[in-house]
Structures are given as C-alpha cells and as structure tokens.
Amino acid sequence: MDPALPIVALSLVLGAIIAFLFFNSYFRKRQSEVRSIAKSDLDPNPNPTSKPLPKKPLSKPHSSDKDQNKRHHPLDLNTLKGHGDAVTGICFSHDGRNLATACADGVLRVFKLDDASSKSFKFLRINLPAGGHPTAVAFSDDASSIVVSSYTLSGSSLYMYGEGKPVSSENKQTKLPLPEIKWEHHKVHDKKSILTMFGASATYGSGDGSTIIASCSEGTDIILWHGKTGKSVGHVDTNQLKNNMAAISPNGRFIAAAAFTADVKVWEIVYAKDGSAKEVLNVMQLKGHKSAVTWLCFTPNSEQIITASKDGTMRIWNINVRYHLDEDPKTLKVFPIPLRDSSGAALHYDRLSISPDGKILAATHGSTLQWLCVDTGKVLDTAEKAHDSDISCISWSPKAIPMGNDKVLVLATASADKKVKLWASPSIPSS
Image (cartoon, rainbow, N blue to C red; front, side, top):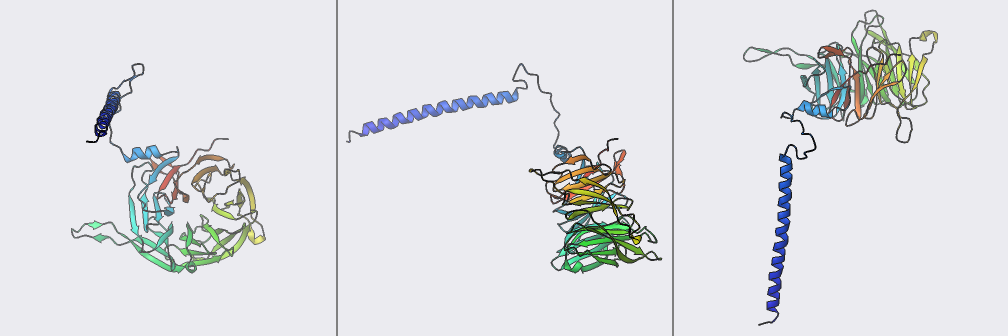
C-alpha cells in the first residue's frame, strides 16, 4: 500500500467539506436577499417615512396609449398607419376631407379624414399594376379621381383611377364601386422617374375650371396633363441639367420650376376661348439667388412665389407684373434660413408648403419640420425629428378639417419611416 494514499484521501474529504460549507453559506445569503426583495415588493409602504404611492387602476395596454407616449410635440395631432414601406407622395382632395398616399409597397391609399383626432382612419386601398414603384400622386377633378405616377426600369407610367361601376353580389346587394383605371400613359418623360406632381383648377382667364396636372421628371422636362381626359396639353424644358421640382399656381395660370441652377423659370399657360389649354409660354425668370433653388411654392392668390435656396436664404417674389411690357418680377422679401449645422454653417430647406390662408410656411430639412411666419420670416415652432427618417412629402389641407367640435388647418408630412403625420398649425403672435 502506498503511504501517500491516506493523505490524498484526507485532502479530498477536507476539500469537499470546505466546498459544502462555502456554497451553503452563499445560498443562504442569496435566499435571504430574495426574501428581502420579495417583501419590499409586496409591502406597499416599505419606508415608514415616505407616503404610500397612490393605487393606479389596472388597464390593458392600448395602441393610443403608446401613441400618446410617443407623441413628442404639441402640434402632433395624429399618425396615419398601415403603410408597408416608404411613403413617396401625398395629396389632399380639394375639400381636405381625403388624403391620398403613394407608397413603395405598390399601394395607393385614400384616407377619409372625418375627424383629425380619430383613433383610426378608414381608407380605400388601390393596388397598382405589379412591378411599379409609386413616386407621386395628385387628385384630379374630385375626390374619386386620382392620378398616380409609377416607375419601373422601362420608365414612368401615369394612371388615373376613377369611380367604377357598382358591383352586384349574389344576394343582390349592391357593393360600393371599385376604382378602375380611366386612362394611362407609359414611358413618359423619356423613361425618367417623375419627381413631383401638382394639380390646379384652370380658373384664370378663359380656363374652364378643369384640373391641370404638372408632372416634373428628374431630367429637365415638365408635362402638363388634362386631369379628366389624360390628354397632354403642354410640354416645357427647363434646360437646367436636372430638375428638383415644379409647381403649378392655384389658378392654373403659371408653372415654375426649381432646378440645378440659381434661376427659376416661369411659364404661363394660355387658354383658348373654349377653355382648353392652348399653349405654354416662357414669360419670366426669377434672378437673385446665388445657388441652386431646392424648392418653391405659389402663394394662394397665385401672385407670389416663395423660393428656398442652397445659398441659405428664402425669397418672396412678386410675379404679378406686366411681363409683356418687359416688367421684371420683383423680390419683395429676403429671409435667412434659420437652420445651422453643428459647425454653425447655414443649412437649406428641402421642401416648402404654404397654408391656404397664406400666413404660415411649413419647411423641412431632413427630419426637421419648421413653421414660419410668411410676413416676418420668424420661426413659429420647430419639431426636430418629426419623423424617424427624412421627410419625403409635405402638404397643407386646402380647407380646415373637423377635429372634435372644432375645425383645424392641418399639415401632413410623410417619410420613409412608413408614417404619415398630421400636424396642427401654430398660432401667430399678435404684433
């Protein structure tokens, strides 16, 4: 027998005893801590010197509760959900009670805005032809007529959806009519994507009140379409390397384009005696910015244009001039864009939209949303990170829409975050 064996056996026994004592002490300590924590959780007033917390009624989590917690700005009214991808275009109907959205999931949605404070909104879903990527949307003559642009590798297409025939089911109950394509065009704009579409009623001069829609490509061309028939009624070229956007004045008289250069070209639509668009004439240029104009919008009276430029300024122009007598458009006001980056350098606005009363200008840069007083250029309010991604679209409702027992002017914004948000208009301080 090896004399070392008893020593090894004794060492193993002693080690086991020491391990048992250590772990027994450790587990007793942990058990005591757990009991102490459990007691403090059960005790409604563990600290005798502090007041008991008021009991809260139990309630099931609700989606609106979550929305309320996420709502980070007092002007944030509501969010339109249900989009499966980035929202690329939005447009209000003429009465403001419908909001159409174009989405990268290939679906056109038309939301009914019966009350801006609703917990949910009913919407009509229109599936676009497969393979297309919707880029812009505009209402035609009424809320049931919608024009949408869709882009594929072979180019851009335009579809006008209108009210179809009522559908009768087997039980002889008539269902609501489904929208159907009334007209369509393919490979427009030389196979380039459509950036923006704006529509207006032709009420100027001898215009017959029909909706004229201006589609602006990422190239240099702009095409005018008769909303109801789909007929092309005009075509212009900016000859400025690359378009940023184009808009049509509310009365259907002028088109203006923001492009690669600092100058803004303005065209006039001339209407024939029968009310149809006869020709489009290049009538003036807005000269004064020192860098590219990123966005522009017409004032509600169609007599002024507001421009935003990469030179860090905004300008308000008077275009109600006798250009045929060589009168030039005049700069009425110049405002610095009140945005700075971390180094203090001036930033530019990506998009603009003016309220229907002409008093408030909404402007965006990235995911930042600002409201400015048109008269003074002063910032009325700012929503930083208004969306989780850059804001892609912005538009005011043409008229106030119901909200409870009141009516409010509403601004809609959309983004790649799959959301469309509704915002109240800020108050303008009295001077």
